Picture 1 (tube, helix red, strand yellow):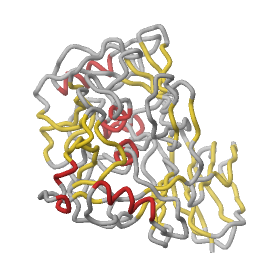
Picture 2: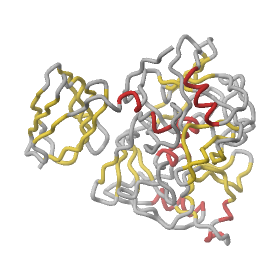
Picture 3: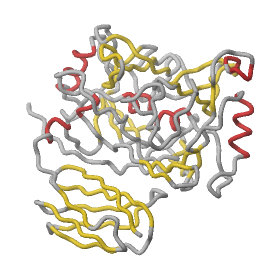
Length: 399
């Protein structure tokens, strides 16, 4: 059966969280950003580059801070340098930067959210984040069963649990740095994270993603791509292989063996699951999640791992499916002094403008092909237009 999909940036909220018996979770991130991987590594449909959901979009605030408009988090532009885990915690809590004093250490999920998987060493967008000498960045979380280890992101693009004694300042040989983060909006609490849909699928209410509960048997990466795209489950055939950020998002740093909640993923065990994300500098390898603790790493694509398929709550389309569609849209003047015009060859549809704090300051829907909009605020903004079944984003400067 041919899949009919629509390219759409979802508006369902995501956040960093802590697992409790009551399943209450703390939400600090608005959405889960895409990995940034746009390069293609196979002709088989379903790889990471074929889906572009919530593409990363950063704003440089000009004061040493960067706002991630997808997650809504604000980051330290240049990391704080190499230091011990304990000092990193104190450093982040005491930091005053950009006129803000409510900085903190990020969770491992938040750290993973800014990694750019089309880049390597560092796997960061260095247009916005100062290129560091770091090999790792500390998270706020220690390994649940071993307080001598902490969760970190690495410059190669993965996350893992490492002895806190490995950093240079603790007598080790590796460079563990700290990059502080702050909440632009106050985090909220979701009482129940997962929902069992009673049809072989589980909904994650933080991300809005719907997951296959029981992973497949082991298969190669290419076979897993094909299997995911062909899957029909829970009344839907819009399944795909998750990218590595999506896959890592259901791994919990507070549980292990496995690191995925077995109550809602009844078929999960301590295993390794494929992601659709290739290793950018070694195209024969792909990223996977090891569910013993939740480490992300890479392995050659001919190895046989399991597949845990995913789909979005709203339908999305493959980039391949819209590659030949017209998405022409003109924006003028830009920069402007408060008003600008949008013009397209099809009705413009949903239009949204986001400020540097990640807040929507204008939202409208129109069937017109040309429209003039007014902005009272000055600064740099992101315009998001759902036009001709595609999402178009543009930066706007108001003087």
